Image (cartoon, rainbow, N blue to C red; front, top):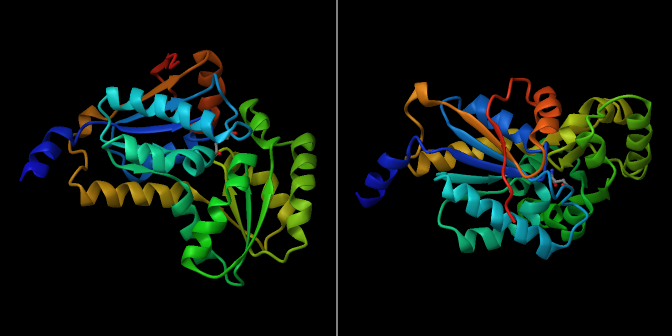
Length: 274
Ligand code: DGL
């Protein structure tokens, strides 16, 4: 009863989503498509991007600050739409805050295991995600598989600059994919939420025999199950709003973000969190 009373008040509270920059927009779009009545607050930590080359403690510090900010906005659930922050900060955030917190790695690992037939799975991600071995651990919890990892540190700066196709992108993609192509993988996990924006070039260079797994849809599915379990689905269509906050200039985010999000971002504010 107590739980239900709390939930009645909170049903139309927003879902909080964060990433270091544009990457989490891929997760936001999937959540918005699956749960179109939900209000959303998105935080892009553009002052501190990239997270992938930073230390675990630094990423935990930023993740805590952003989650505190989102909780002040009265979010009912937080999605860490960033693999690096999921790898480093998910347990700490769950210990520190009371709202449900969902990361992208476990949904991505599950999706990879169900997509792979030969159980030879490639993982591409930031240096932080790759060094944490989080995908390796999550995948092997579910099924025995050969997991091959490759860090792709130049992908995030390319995406943040809005460079998602063309000769330079293709050359960088080719260079990073080469070691994985020798491993007979049938599935490749895009273990960074920025990487789906490079799918076209990845597909072109990997051929048609390798399935690309993007954790966005699987994460949206997880958000849906948690909201259902907690009786937290939004119920008022008229109130649906998506607000964006960034920790650096909002202008660049507006211009490049719109290309990735596909819709006009009418509410964007700069918010310093440190
Ligand atoms: N998009 C994030 C990830 O999924 C962070 C990338 C970065 O800032 O390096 O890992």
